[in-house]
Image (cartoon, rainbow, N blue to C red; front, side, top):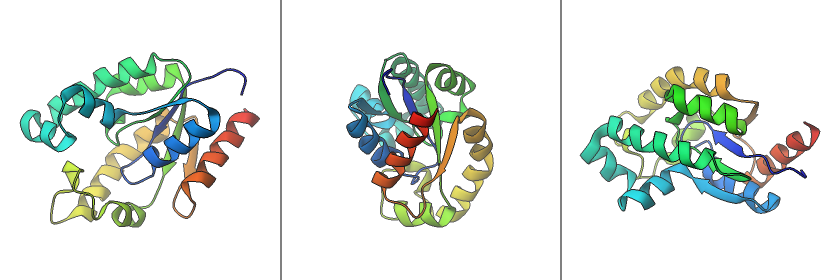
Length: 172
């Protein structure tokens, strides 16, 4: 890839966006960003704290600002938060400013990958499966709408998925 286009990873929590994004950025010699990490850096607090103090609406405003800033960079790999696609502005910016890859996964894989993670405010409930199912119903059509490519991540390592993305980009 001679030209360094931005690559934006979207998908539900537990799809592997951050892990795959790091591998992808490393292999392509690009800078990697995780929108949730940037929000934490800018606020000086973790995502759970932002949710507790500002609610999901306050978090989404911060997320929109971060995604607007990051998508204006050149030659980056960005792992977005699972709910970032709920904002039409985010979907428009992601579509217009880079190549969007939807990392698709099953509810079972999401549960397995997130069960011990206390940093996911929406899953701090007695019914995480129901939460993930409701989120999937709401967000999956938005991931599909914004995606240039869709890759299932269930039974593959992050490195294999990163290599698949690189191959798709080379064939583009």
